[in-house]
Image (tube, rainbow, N blue to C red):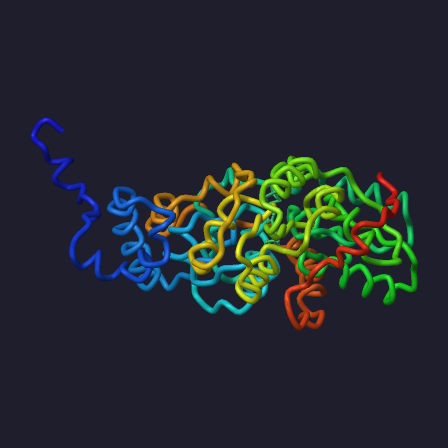
Length: 368
Ligand code: 13P
Ligand code: SF4
């Protein structure tokens, strides 16, 4: 290195905030300017321009979950949405490379649906407390204990768990899937795993009995009804939108419950003057970028797994083709059947919502 040869051979990335970069990224800046400082933007804008150039060069698309930070969500996401929407988009994607701006189970779902495409995740440690709460061996034991009952699995699970499953669901279609599978199997009880709170919230929406597992989302389990009532006392006109991964007591004091896409849809259509989104923090930021007339109160929690995905590691992922997600083909084939059964259900007319009158009536679930 003393003669400077190695340095000279390593081209410095062109990450300057040039006039060209500024012009290319101006539409994104117009959306995120209330969420990103001008100093941050000088670093983010060149990365956004470079990522968008690399996508064209590598024939890649980025699937970005609603919990990505605004510069990712609005700057580089080709398809953005909730878990159900991203799974549907993965299946339609005809690009060579899919970069999952989300957590590992989402990237696995994309790989399951697109076995011939390269699926990349920018950080392999982007996990999920729900996905790590249960294993394929656990599901095999559950099936032995409840023979004849169908297993519905939340998509927030590993491919090995999906492979042991009859049909997958997301928060956007869990009630629909449970009722469909109960009818199809001619049973009055269904196993719905691994999210205990989603299972308890679904149980209140249907007459189908629910057998649940004790998994929790570490982000949504922290919300309490007391927190919400305190905020409501201070801002009585604020509309409270909660995610069904929250404890049932939270939905009991909310005005609306639905998947992340359903919450975004609610704000876009109803344009409330003031809302609280009881979910991950970036969600409100992303929705706020397109809802200037709405004031967002912020009793939110961060997902440390989602926050592992950054513009920098998305750029490196595209540049270096890392980290490739693989799923054992035999496991993928069985998991695909469960995901496909979910995708093949007729899409709801609008993002599914939970009936909050029903949500206030306690219904027991059997906890394994
Ligand atoms: P949805 O986007 O499907 O509502 O899921 C939320 C979530 O926690 C994903 O990890
Ligand atoms: Fe998992 Fe919860 Fe994070 Fe979603 S928000 S990835 S469910 S830990």
